[in-house]
Image (tube, rainbow, N blue to C red; front, side, top):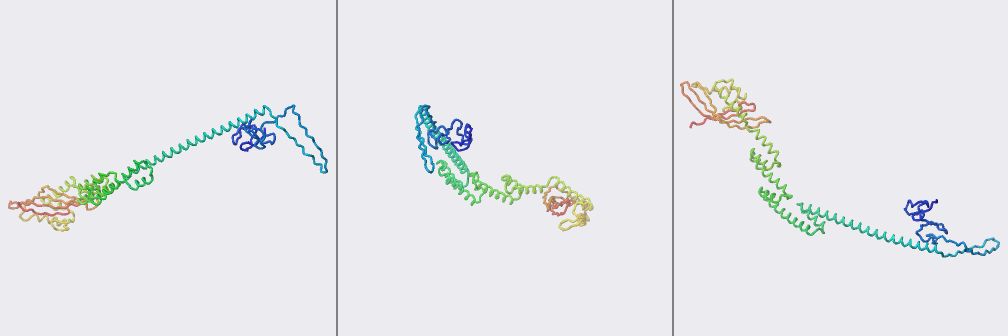
Amino acid sequence: MAIIKCPECGHQVSDKAPTCPSCGVEIAHHIIRCKYCGEVYLDDQSVCPNCHDHQEDIHTPENEEETSFEKEDTYQDDAIPLTVRRESEETTSPEKDEKTRKASTTEKNKGKRDYSALIVSFVLALIICGCCLYFYNNAKTEKESSAYEYAMKSSEPDVLQSYLKTYIDAPKQHREDIEKRMTQLKSIDKEWINALVSNSKSALRRYVDTHPDSKHKAEALQKIDSMDWAIAAKNNTIDAMREYLADHEKGLHANEANERIKKFNALIVTPEEQTMIAGLFRKFFQSINSKNGEALTQYVEPTMTSLIGQPNATKADVQAFMEKQYKENVSNLNWHILGDYKTQKHEIAEGRYEYIVSFSATKVEEHKDNSKAEGKYTINGTVSPDKRISLLNMTKLANP
């Protein structure tokens, strides 16, 4: 075994190795060493690539006589020998012809293999190029289709214009659809301007119903919302707030409307509150009927806002009012409340309410001479958050 240079790549390799570990060319049994120059080359080459001699060994027949060269010895002062030259003649043999024929066949087969490989490579290249072109065109078509669908759904003219500029080679039908869409959007914009300038709720509502996908839809609904709220706020009733919420459940002013409804509900006089108010005035007038000044003052504020036109009336003033009811000729007094209460509730502080009350009452005076006098009055009063009477006024009605 010897280390040689690979005839193909020059990499050092054993002459017994099946193939070169660097380039993969076959080594064992496929190399020849030139007997003239020592060059190592592959057996599919007909001549030595270095000295260009044939790869066959030159065989000398046993009976071939060796040509004798006469040697002439020349003795000179320098004692330099004469050059001995041997000239070999090439001999022709059947073995040599067979080897030559095999080498020629090998070269032809190698040429055929190279030509076949070239054809296969060319076909593969065509297939790869075809596949790349197919996928490129397919991706380009899909991209155009996606852009077309997006543009057709858009309400922005710039998006449509961009499609027309980008996809000049798009299908004719697609380009025509985009152009029609642009014309449609221009018409819609004109309708929007007319509805906006009119400042009419009906015109805005008609625009939204006609063009539910318009880019101006949100703005139109917002303007309708503002118009409806302005009406509801102006009326400022619980019914107006409820009507607004019915049309704008999630409107811009929905929270405020709900807050106002809560306040309105808080101002509604409940049956329990009405019972409390009726009981308070009944006890007040019953105390007058019984001429019980001490009990009477339990149902009024220590300082009343007004008592029969007298401001800042004290409990002493309330008792004096009661005593005035009993004139010298009055033996008995009977106040009778008719029960036609009209009550309003007002918030005067956080969670504190007062009640404005109006109702009718009759007063019957029994005189010492057994005569009677009867009168009808309208009573206006205020009940404080502490559930005491803070204001009381009376107006006598004319006899029918």
